[in-house]
Image (cartoon, rainbow, N blue to C red; front, side):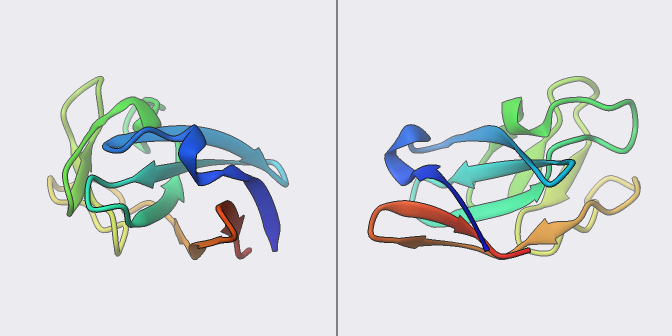
Length: 98
């Protein structure tokens, strides 16, 4: 378990990258207030997924517009899947379970 910071450090509809135990993890705060976490590095060319466009279901890499499901990490555009991490909010703190 790793505390990342306050949930309000991530504006609604955006993501932030955190370095956790040698891994780069993108944490997204969706517009409905839910939280998702997955690998922050696009497997195609290393793009920063936390900077991608999100909706309630997917993130789109800002470099080449490949998309991944925010819940499963499965590619929606024929690329390699990315890892998904359990994340929750406890007392306004982001808690990543690794």
